[in-house]
Image 1: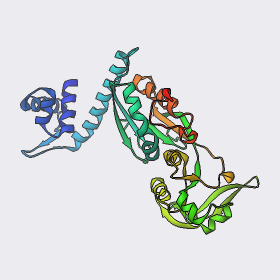
Image 2 (image 1 turned 180 degrees about the horizontal axis):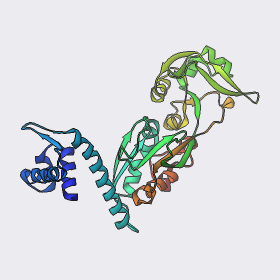
Image 3 (image 1 turned 180 degrees about the vertical axis):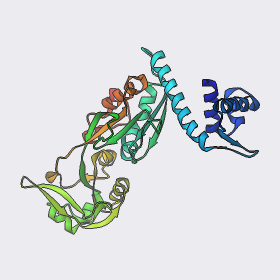
Length: 308
């Protein structure tokens, strides 16, 4: 049964009997017979076959999703049992928010891969909140509140939103001395959050200050790049700006009025998944690497933290 499932899933993923046959070391006719045997047992057609292409039937589409998950679960169970006490191996499927993936995780993954050479990483980068089970992911990296009760959340670190600008912009327009001075500056804001007000701590109290929204963008990465180019002052997560601050491309603005409002960064995973060695070592690595908030400490993140 497993052989039929594996063959069917591989045919769908490769898009042809011949490509699947080459990977399995079989003839295309043998692969076709295995799929036909599966269809006969299920008493339903899974694939539309033509001389030019293969396509899934509606029943085949449903069966492919379930078969893929079943095979992944079998693979994970085998790995969990066989790798006890040994170096982890196999595929690790990670789903990660964009900003953290671009600015921190991408720099760290080569270190993780060198430490665990028998593991293969599949990284999906998106700010969409996805169903980890439906996406066949082992672990997700998310920020803010975790609302899905089926997931276990393990806090990795905190980040905060702060104000930054390029030295060239400040040399031309001057460094604001108080939040009120922002009215005379070009501010880069998030387009989805009008009215455009930023919070500050003034005389011991929280004050929301209207800012001059010269540019409105729909994601933080764009705001960051515009600020680096000298386009104005922006308020973004500090985990995005570590390299830009270390290199002198950006400097903090109005830090004396900063509101401490930490936002948690979590690793999330389905119940029981942490028992798998590949997930467990990745969680440990994330805590080792990021729990101290290296984007704030000025510590470079290119090498192995054990050597810093």
